[in-house]
Image (cartoon, rainbow, N blue to C red):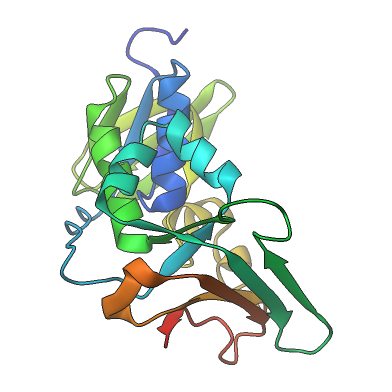
Length: 224
């Protein structure tokens, strides 16, 4: 249990990782604050997002535990039956087929903007989770008993732990480690492409995943 007025966790960044982490902690009874600079734009069924995730059953199970899978599935989540995985740098190829495994499908294709939208909404319904948006992290004060996140709004959030989930240009990383880690290269990436036009997401069957260097293999797209 937290001491009165102190949080257990401050999460900076309300993307997929940050929102999911904040939700998981709050649903376990921890007192959580989620800091986000911009309210995520509402998902629109009329504007398919070409950035997608190929979810496996364990990903679905996690979202079910967080209370977010049913809203995602009700909006738009499409099963895929095959997945091909290869590396742009060379080597072999893996081909997963639901028929060979005796399953109806391997998982679901989920749009990034839909997932962010539904996770953000779930955070708003969680009684142990407070959202600070729009707001940004300006400073971090740490001592032996915990950490204080100083926000641009002037609020000071005292917690036992601070989690940075604010992307490649992380304010948390910059404040904690200065320039030492801010410019670390990330020379590996992966992309997911689903076999269908953006206007035909309901007909997806094959998910292709390609890994490689940053020289182009990190793109995510819907292919015809």
